[in-house]
Length: 41
Image (cartoon, rainbow, N blue to C red; front, side):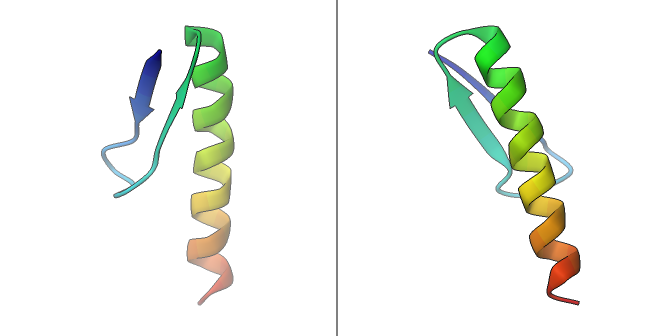
């Protein structure tokens, strides 16, 4: 199990079984985070 977080985006983190899966998941988490942040403004 691996975990990734983006310190500059509070609460933006993800996990996965492999490093590759974590990197894909965190990319998606960043997109969702930014979409929600800017969609609400």
